[in-house]
Length: 275
Length: 302
Image 1: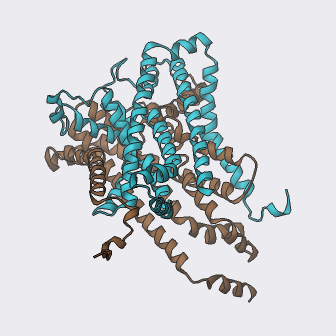
Image 2 (image 1 turned 90 degrees about the vertical axis):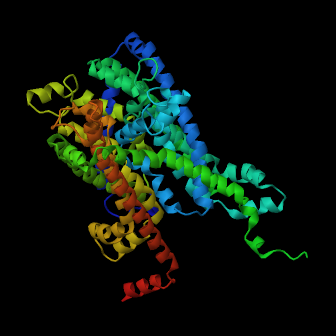
Image 3 (image 1 turned 135 degrees about the vertical axis):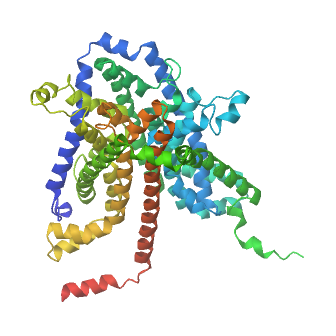
């Protein structure tokens, strides 16, 4: 250790020791239990558990719905962030605070409330059902619940980047003869693209694992509207610990991958804005 | 006739035409109302559908009360533990350079990306009857899973990164200068922390605690796996909402849900207040004339 980086402040060993100890106790040891349990399964056991038709259908739903919801969130999240940063209108502060509602509202509450709205006799559902549109108790409901859950991720990652964006660049583009739309596509959008992608990945990652808000509205029909976390729960309720563990390990692996992707995206974003 | 009209001075080229602005604001507001305001309103309307008396009855019920108590107990254990961890983790990550620092930061974020259901499952695998510690726990008659300790553990897991996440970037941005100055002036480590670091990070700390608490009280998936759903014993408020809802006791379910929604609104209000105070403090520091450092240097000499 060179003199320049000598630790002047006390408490390094204490805080690092406690951090690592607590991390191991709460996160790493229990997570490793999942891995060890998975390794006690034979390969055919594992493979059968994670590729059963019902489980495959749940992957399709979870992925598909999460992807659609995250894409919708990118569009509307950008719009909301844009409106909040660039324009003034009455009630703006309130709307800004409200963006975080999905973070603060317990997922079960969101779930029953969306169901009450969209069910056939609900506030919104009663008008849509005569038109043949059903939004509750089928995959549509899953998408809507996931849009609700993921919105703040996109808004809150894009908002600060938009706030820091240099207006001079837009003025320069205008002086060089660009239309407002060209300026947006060629100047503003490239600047916020990394943040938008990060927000997308975060909303997607959250949506994949979401349970509370979805199970009420999904209807939970096997093969049609059953999400992967629910498969784990129902396997547990049947005391099929091996099966639950196998499916959970697939989800955990995916979480790791998404976490690494998000980290890489954030590094990219930092480098871009720092340069 | 070629004199420019005065309003055009307002940089028309870095904003959109009025109709575009209005449309965008309109679409954004409609979206926010449909997806955020309407569900919130639905909770309170459904809860009060049969009047205040039925509402109070639903909340006075003993099972609802025990769910409320358990929810508060869980948050009262989980939040302080994660607070201590968050401060310790932020101190060692923000104040020092060491190998594996970014790896450690990633590991701290890990519980954010693990599905809550998986979070519950891992505790069942450790403490459950067929788990690692299951036989030993059964021998000593200790119940963790399907009992209160399991609920608290699962809650600690899902709220694990909240406070650390708020504090790490904040303390990194603030740097070590002030703490080093305190050390040079003879403060002990604790004094440095209490009188220098803590006042600097207090808003970030409150912010993290608020979010951590909201999640701790509202967690559903992880707690649902480890709870065992015993009424009056291992039911938190969100689980109680689920049970009532599945029994078609809609009003009672929404009554308990409305308490959780109020908690969420309170969280948002405190959060906005903290942000506002923090911004005000920041502005106050940047507006200060550059005298204080000189004054401090003078004190040090004296």
